[in-house]
Length: 203
Image (cartoon, rainbow, N blue to C red; front, side, top):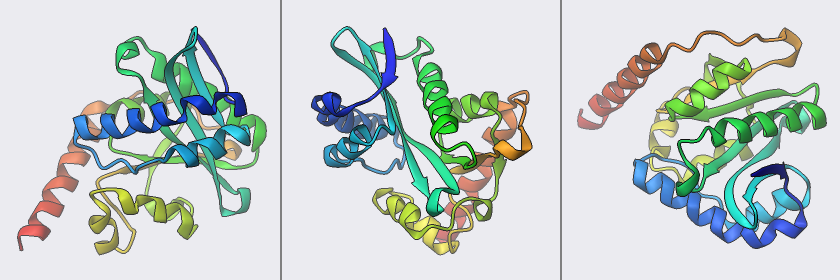
């Protein structure tokens, strides 16, 4: 297994990656935003993506997005092919793309929004902390990416202050240290959000 920076030569995997992301979102019932093969192409060509390959077989992927004129970066599209799940590969890919971010954008704050408990745990271990959406980028292009999410109406109703996703941030200037991961607390937060929005929908 090798985890490397993706290049133009890897664009042949873009369609597979796009389909894998879509299928994963459907199976988990999450509102992950869709990524087209063309969009994935651009990330590979500009050196802002990481791909995991088992020989010639696709195993996993993640890419970097740059926002706010380089003040923020985000890791998106983290996916592991079904046959390679449960082996800790997602954590290795995330660490690789995290290190790539710090190398290419050393002064940028690294952030993400996710509903996945596994991704939250990985972020915690890298030194991220949960934050309000107001601490994330205000770049409208980033938030446009949420339009294909099934929970987009929640985001608009709250005037982009909160959603079912949890915002997480790593600030290199704070030299954030990893903290113990408390899954029960984050699960409770997730349930509170779901209950809150369900009540609004039924009112």
